[in-house]
Amino acid sequence: MAERDESAVQAQWARVRARLREEFGEAAFRTWLKPLTLKDLRAGALRLAVPTRFMRDWVQTNYSDRLRTLWSGENGTVRSIEIVIESVLARAAPVDGAQAEPEAIVVADGAEEPPIDRNEFGGRLDPRFTFENFVVGKPNELAHAAARRVAEASTVPFNPLFLYGSVGLGKTHLMHAIAWQVRRREPGKRVIYLSAEKFMFQFVKAVRFKDTMAFKEQFRSVDVLMIDDVQFLCGKDSTQEEFFYTFNALVDQNRQIVISADKSPSDLEGLEERMRSRLGWGLVADIHPTTYELRLGILQTKAEQMGFAAPTKVLEFLAHKITSNVRELEGALNRIAAHASLVGRSVSLETAQEVLHDLLRANDRRITIEEIQKRVAEHFSIRLADMHSARRARAVARPRQVAMYLCKQLTPRSLPEIGRKFGGRDHTTVMHAVRKIEELRAIDPNLSEDIDLLRRMLET
Ligand code: ADP
Ligand code: MG
Image (cartoon, rainbow, N blue to C red):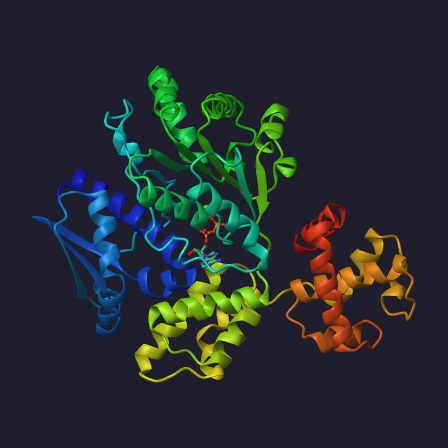
């Protein structure tokens, strides 16, 4: 390759890798994809090298389709991809430090081309992110129902739909699902999905090239505009201003807007006041951290989709241990499936522990029951001793239940273990507390807020 071409191809490879990492999760990426190195591209034939035969076979079977698609999105000259075996020693240094590319996707286009560089929207929707593949549980049922409503309604049901929740809980999945569904139902509709980062990038570029009219036009002719991760716009005043403008124009024309962020509008810092209030005008739906039941449901669904007959014990173990987010959960499952297919037999609990030891360590919560009790007692101004006491007055019983609930959510401790730390209470008492708080949360926004606040304090 000529030097200049080579560096272009390396940059494309870095983007492909970033995409792979994002799509398959850190664990699968590290195990199977990171070891791939770019060897060369000659006459449309791209060669990637892996260190062992086994890895070649695995990558070939599981990732080659995706590799091909991602590559053809990056470089039209790539016609074939070959995965070759090359010992580590002979390899050049791997390309690293790839940053995830912000993505932007035009799902359906009207007749005329938008005036702005179409290549900027060269992304794609993830085919796996559909409603069919989304497992619904308590923590995400509102967000899911709202997303479906938006995708299936013939008039705009609420504007905007604001989805929020922490990383890896399915915001992007739901947005893509909306796009797929709208496309299926009404192929003529124009849907744009893009990250806030990409929005900003487009805007800055338009300003630089004095082409802001075209920029505005482009967004103004859309039926559904979805902007992912708007927390990125916080503190970026001129972009926010432009966003606000676009946003209002679309709302005035009764076009659907869907926004996602990692926090609620009122908690997003560095957001202009009018922007904040406007974002909260429609439906604000939060995605709560996963519960054990949801995690287990997701694992069962995904294992089934992969055709991986995982022992229930192993899935339960994962659902207990990998509590951080769904992306990591998927990564863990992929890794175990890979291992099972490698050794050609089912995975035992011990093997699962071994295969995932790094992930498990990272998911080992440092939050302790004592810490939770202390924080909750402080928050509700009760004595720490009342966490253990037999007093049943509402003023102490409720905070105690909140603490038990948080212990269940934030620590890997079992119900009996939690009960013991609350003055030797029975596990059914803890279970009752967890249910009670879940119920109350749904109807009592103050309590819900208290709990979110406590959780955030405990988690940081
Ligand atoms: P976010 O955008 O909130 O950071 P993503 O939408 O990217 O999270 O989700 C991370 C991964 O977890 C994706 O692979 C997604 O498909 C998966 N995921 C999240 N929630 C669910 C769910 N409820 N059912 C199935 N898969 C899910
Ligand atoms: Mg996302």
